[in-house]
Length: 182
Length: 182
DNA sequence: GATAACATGTAACTCGTTACATGATTCC
DNA sequence: GGAATCATGTAACGAGTTACATGTTATC
Image (cartoon, helix red, strand yellow):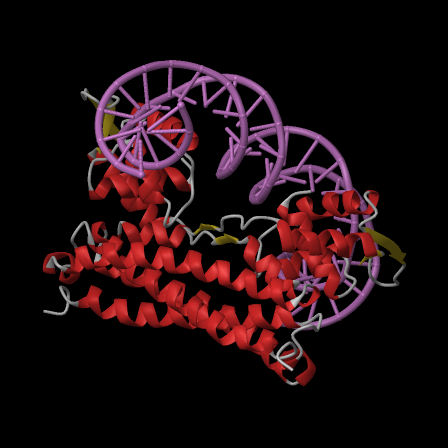
């Protein structure tokens, strides 16, 4: 049982999902490709931490709906309670490029920031749209024992961090122009 | 040449370093253990993107000081210019735990946030201390073509993001108490 | 007497990505 | 006609971690 396995259990605790759905949902908090997720789901099923139901569809491929079991929920809870805080990992190519930004021409530096801004704005839009849906439901926002509550907190966090990075870029951009503008 | 290799070149573009120093410096922007870094440095030397000087020390182990070459700087520049924006990776166990926070007792949830706060404050202190050193030197802060400039930007970014997450926790904490306080 | 900092390296392993494989439907 | 979405799976590879290996000095 690695960290990702518990992550999958956590998502399934909110609602039953297919591997395909989990892959997309997870993207915001823990990147993993489907090739990693499908085998883990099979393992969780073998360990009886989840059950699987095959759902035939017409016009679309059949799918497998996974549901967390009582054992699974117990394992998840004890992981949250007991596991020591694993360190967080961040690997962002953009940051490595910024580190050496003094070496490249200002035009290149500015393009780098512009591209980042575009990507951040796109993500921000998606996250804010999802947040608005959640905020329309008062039980999600107010009941800290709701199954949806943690997800709501995380979306709020994401919005804050995205906005913070955007305002950092706004601050940094004119600093790069300085030597060029004369 | 993978992303980490370019990251190492970027750090070496600022100043010559040993593998040991690089491991520590990199930690803030791209986690990597020394066991991954030492072999890459050997490879960069073979490719003549860096040179290596053996420095004997008394009382401490000998060390190897790596310096970026003209070829190395050129490779680094063209990577920054041309390489398409690689996606950023974040893997944070804490986030997965928060996702399922509705399942655990409020006391556990609060402890989770408290531990996170402590870790964030510690990191914030280190980053702010380093920032103050940089801000004492006006050339670093004002000259966007300085070798130090990118690093300065990144430390500013880090401070902003750490503070943002701290204020998110301050906002979230009372929401968890709600059901308990009655 | 134990731990931390300094300093480098290799081997075995797990984790994660890329590519291969299949196949219908909808939108441009 | 081509791309995107839905949907699952495996194999080969590359990236990253853990553990092993060595040795001094300074601090608690």
